[in-house]
Image: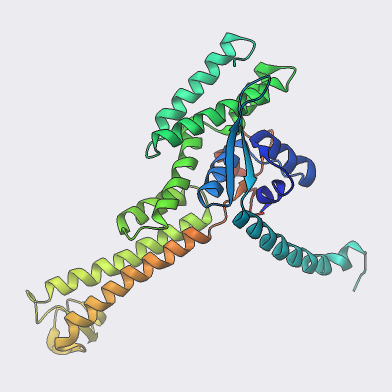
Length: 100
Length: 217
């Protein structure tokens, strides 16, 4: 879900996805797991990709969400939101410092 | 495009050569795409750093050994193929590789082992029944119950009689097909775990083993 979410707003290449995950969610994902997952998400039709030649430097492979990918991201985000709200309710007394 | 120092390029090339030779079972076109992407990633990491050599060290460590990285790609490809296959051998082999990556894979492997062993056991008993009609059967009695070969059949009760072959053949078929469908469903529904990077561990595989920081998000 985190990878799909990182691609919600724009096309990104691998290193940008890692940075987006680290900056926005503090998820420090290992490179060795990211690329095989991107490959799988692409073969499932959730992502598409394209090699883009840079004006300076080397080509980069950019990924973006396909229509099924956007649908899946929306479903997963909804489920995550519901789950996190319930969990927040559960831990609220602890955070609020209420004793029994 | 090359990095500043030829020695760094040589290190990247050495890593990619090992990766290519470890990427067995993946089409040549996909292999080339993987190698190109990993090279681009290493070079990106080095370019954005004031210490390219240190950055390459770090990124190679985070990628894992070429064998570990290749195993991840190969297993992902195998899982894709197996999730659409009816071959018990392919599914079992895939589950074995999947088991090396986490708990879900281990569970799938044991399910595959149990389901297909059951189907194989039923099939063998169906083929043996015509040759040992008074011994092979679904028995119950002092020596236990189930498909067994009792030492004293006269003390046992045989439940299925002439229906043994069709009933057990159907059970073998259902075990095999049920196991296959269950595993294919698990493979399609799987969520890949993201391995959280930590600076003080050596490789993604090591992090999975020792820190258990694998999360599904």
